[in-house]
Image 1 (cartoon, helix red, strand yellow):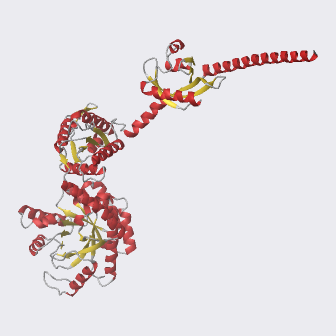
Image 2 (tube, one colour):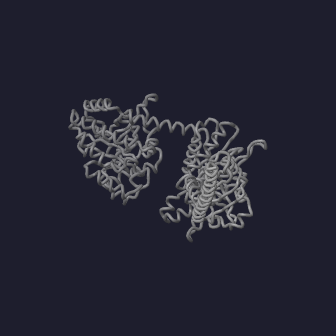
Image 3 (spheres, helix red, strand yellow):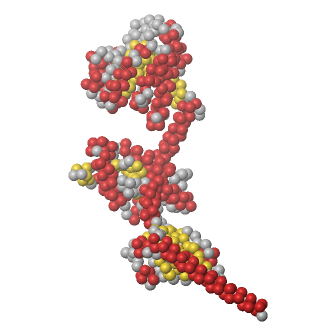
Length: 613
């Protein structure tokens, strides 16, 4: 009996304990629900509770603030109803995955705001299981990332578009160009064209009217170019083929724009578009109350199967544009096979030139300058020659333009001055110390504009110990007149070193006599074209005579260049020309040949009109 009451007491205690556990569980659940409510109602993110079928069980107050829907409006719709149709499938898949695995994955999707706009949410779901361990509910935390996505999209847009005009930039243009190139490689019949458009005289306008007007002009040019392009500027080969993409207008940089025309049927299609563009840009622009007129030069490149890289088409268009600009604006040129061959040869020449500089393939040749009355040698002009490994000796007429364009003339010219000074210094210290020989070296445009020129000349004189008065630097008339003020400054600095300055090719350019008088020249050299024509053209002969007279009035000695026959020499002597240079006396000679020439002159007896010491 006692055992019975003990068991009964234990059962009663167990019941009381179970009741206690239930009460405690309810209290904990209530606390959790209270805590959940506090958190969700004060959270910045939107928090939702949905059942396994997607029905909304709870939406935090942030839904009203972020999406504009009231709790009542949300309760009347499914959780998927406001989701963008393009995103519904991936949201459904993410919900299914969360129900299956109990673990949600982060995803982004668009949802409609009450005002009809779209917001971008970043979302992650967590599972709530029932007593059986089954997923019964999903807690979804949504964060509004619309502004962040807009900023990212704007950043992405800016990386591919020009800020001033809003057009695609060079990066996007090259990407599209590459795509067209790869498509053409797969289908050889796929032909496309590139138009390179340059606003004529833009730099002058920008300098004259200011950067603001320049920017306004570029923006307006972009708008007009866009309006000049039409969808029919791309031509499909046949109805069965993929239609060409719309023309891509880009701003390459500065005042250059590019237009990619996909699937053209004939080069004339590109030319037709170019002429339409030129006509559109010929109309006056009204900018800040000012009427501005301009024109455009256009270079056209056409894809062909021989091109190995996408950028070759851009190089072709650039070559065509250069030819169009050389015709003084408002011209359009199409790149042809001959231009392509010239461009390829030019690129190879530039590469060979760089190798020539590093491998010291250059050599100095010396052409004598003689006194016209006695033929006595007065000095040498140092001339550059290139010993090409395959082509042999190359005249500078064939490579100086390329060297100037690439900036290599600065390094080459510096070497030429130093090497020639070293050779002349050796002659002066040897058997020819009493001859009073002078050394002439021509300065290129790049070399003359280089800030290190004066220092380089000073260093060459110091290293070689050549008397500065024995060095004469020649600059062309066109170079001196391009910027007379700067020319005067540089020439004055060179004069302070003690070197002489000669104006080369005088009479072949345009110069002001007033400016000429202000520049510190020590002599004039009559250009080769004038000497070559003076016997066959009376007016040219009069010009040469006038130059000699003018130079003597200014107390400047005169050198006649390019003398090839005795009649030319005699005519120059009659005019009073002081010195001469040309094949009549001697071609350019390598250093050993120049020394031999000097020895021959030293042994030649003095004769009237042709003597030499």
